[in-house]
Image 1 (cartoon, helix red, strand yellow):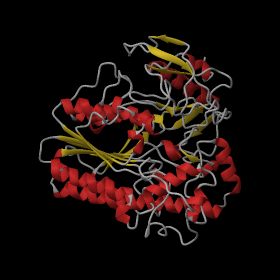
Image 2: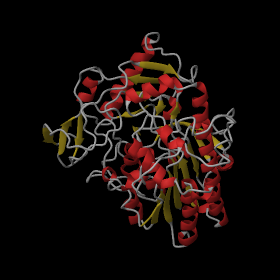
Image 3: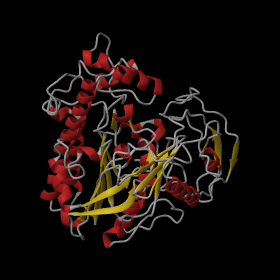
Image 4: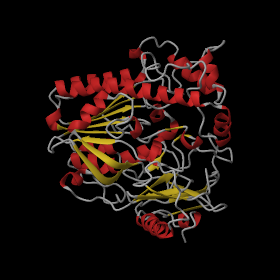
Length: 501
């Protein structure tokens, strides 16, 4: 059976009519695909943000309790190599520029063919020129570094038509890959669109498709969120009109991605591949658009960005069904391995194939998820709890490597891009790893020290914090969280850091 994994970065469930019938965001290709596939209602993130999520996909290992964003470890399995060793032709088509940065080494080198679309976000593709910049670029510079905004502008300033933008290039290239390779034996193709990631920059007709007011010259299309003070400053001066414009651009980008995804799905049909191909459509996380005064995908991980789309087409099962099973990003590793007829490595303890759920199997009773150094979330599907860290407790990362860190969540000691702190110890801290790990102290300013408890059934928007009002449910979920942390083998001091001892 062929395997296709489609990742659309930062895609919100709320923008898809298959999950939110009231949305005005148009996604006809996703709608049509979902009618034939299985829609998973309770699919969640595991580790955030971008590369931690991808380590889960490629290595089947949850990351957020052990270390921040970084390369694959020497002991990590490589999903494309595992599948390739089973006789599959493997390829990736992507514009996700983090893959070719220093701090994301090892993820894609195992594919037999690599197709890169250059230039998204701050990819060092073209050299920014001197002189004045357009008003919309200057608008973005109000709350983000000039050098990064000018880099993006240099990459896209020659774009004239929709075909120049990234989704068109990614999905057209993926369609060409199928044309050239689908007849050469079983294949595993990963197609990854960095859109709908910010900046929310789209051409017409998408820029005005969901609004008649404002323009990117007037409103910022790339709000800050990694640095807390910058986010607070932006929110203090923004307006409802600007937030509405931002949402309209996000929806426009979603519709543009859907159009080109549809062209790729049409190629699958025209090559008569549907009846012999497993197709997984999902994202790495959603993206909050000003709800609760925040942007992005930071802790606390509300369902608005943590409960993410997953649609699976399996040729051996009747489509059009919905699943309530609790699944996570980390499960993609074991799912793809099983579909390829490969056993997951014996040390795998985090990833579970979702394929048994097609036969009615229950995969999990509860899940944990989060971002390194922040609080931790636990959900049983009906109740969700966010446990914040305890102020002043130590935090450590564990890795076989000492890297220049990239921690994109308000580091307080200036470590980004610099020599990291010296490790304080080395040892066999993880029984599933046969190599010693460096134990390195890390300092991160948590987003919040407040704890939260929500009933997802009665309060789907998670607006009513029941931490004080539901002590029985609070204690039950705290016990679940302790059990999950222990079962998943997290460093024992995490229990102290979270006040769970």
